[in-house]
Image (cartoon, rainbow, N blue to C red; front, side, top):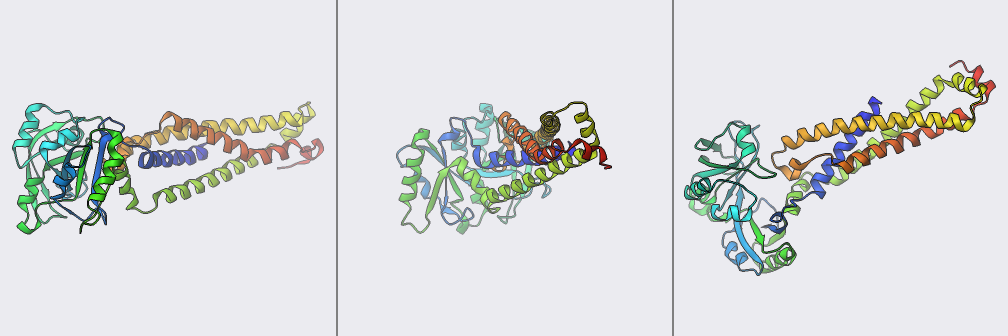
Length: 362
């Protein structure tokens, strides 16, 4: 049972990772309306700030904001979290789900060196409104000091820091200013999204810097592609686990049957039929697999909670969980594979003649 639980625990975690990375997006009304425009070549390549005004004129665009990943180090390299430069006047229009006191919002917008943090992030590092924090640059060769002007609450992805992109520009040499790594766009409706993406990319098709526009959820999932063909890796690992589970279940049941051949002979002597013996052995394998699958799901659920709590907003992993349908799928797979693996040894045991069973010495 422990072997089966360990195997299906890993299978459950892999399933949860796959769903979080490739099937889960921001299902909020605003999330469905958000689009991201980046350099067509690579996310690491910047775009001119002049693109913002042109994107704003595309029909169906409600608002647009330039933003840039800053990176940097907060105290120690292990303290990783998302750090974005943005346009403060547009931030809360594009993310209306951010809940923040009005006075803190105004203080952030009025202070070029101001920053706002998700409450989970602030609690994690014991940061309070009014504190000063410093990021040591790595991508950009500058160190920036910020005034914490507010903390916001959100239903998800609170481990993020936003600050004024103008502060970043003014801290860089003149020839490295006025750029954007990405543009975040809020469409007037979710239905307008595909048409807007197509129009934006067509607008810059003949420009020196071409663009790629996609939904926010697709953009988040694209980060996973930087790690390689993750879907293939997950499939190969899952296939190996499934094969291992079949071997574990089959070997366990086969050993159990071999140890009790004489018991099978005694049962047949007492009147048990081949079908009844077969049913008992398969039933035992099914129950063991069922319990193993259940306990494996329990451990997988705990592991998923741990990953979600420390994901730092990476690629939707903060929403990683073992949902009810995953519990059903994993436990059902455990029952099916456990029972299937037991069929051959169970059939062999049920067909054993009484004389042969009584002669068996183990």
